[in-house]
Length: 234
Ligand code: IPE
Ligand code: IPE
Ligand code: MG
Image 1 (cartoon, rainbow, N blue to C red):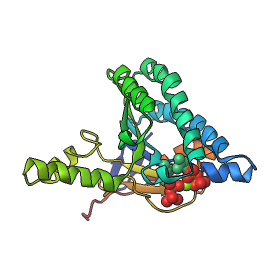
Image 2 (tube, protein in one colour):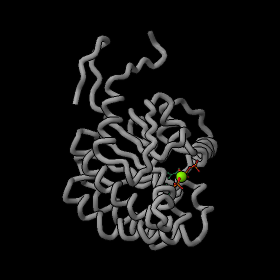
Image 3 (cartoon, rainbow, N blue to C red):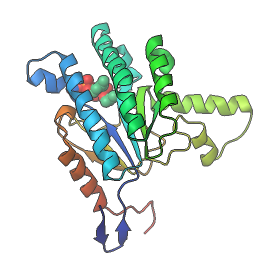
């Protein structure tokens, strides 16, 4: 997907990041428990993942659980953990077949041990995936990621430049997101990829994540393709 522009051509976004927000409100509107919203969100996430890689993305980063979300009630977290278990135990094989590599970013030591094992197993089994990289941000916080990078640099006793600093982040080796989408009506980053998104194009959708269909995703990409990325230049 390409559009001809006055200032030149802009290619399909290589890296798309999505803040998948609005599951709870989606459920509330239907008088369903929040967990039903998360289940619907997971279904949508699987569909959009396939669509994004088929459409031409090479990297897709999905914000599934923030560090701050870990303060939610135990009942909601248990429901989310059950969905993660289902996803990692049933879905990894499909990623292997589709040649997609999986990486999880975040402080996974904050998660139940069996989920950590499933994540490690999933990353191992998809390690040869060449078609694209799916990055799931789970127990992720950008400030925590930055502080951890600073501490690594301090321990090494070395000054860092931008390139070195980037290599100390969880996203080491991954280009910055070209397009960052947030669903669910809010217009904020909620501690997501604060360093990496310095020059990302932002797109906010009023749709709750379970309602955010492939056509809505394509609309976000079209909007991106019509933009002019100046990076501070003229
Ligand atoms: C996003 O949906 C998913 C997670 C944060 C786990 P929410 O659960 O935040 O849904 P809303 O914002 O309450 O509607
Ligand atoms: C951001 O959504 C985190 C994820 C979507 C995983 P939140 O629902 O946690 O964000 P706030 O609390 O509205 O900022
Ligand atoms: Mg929310």
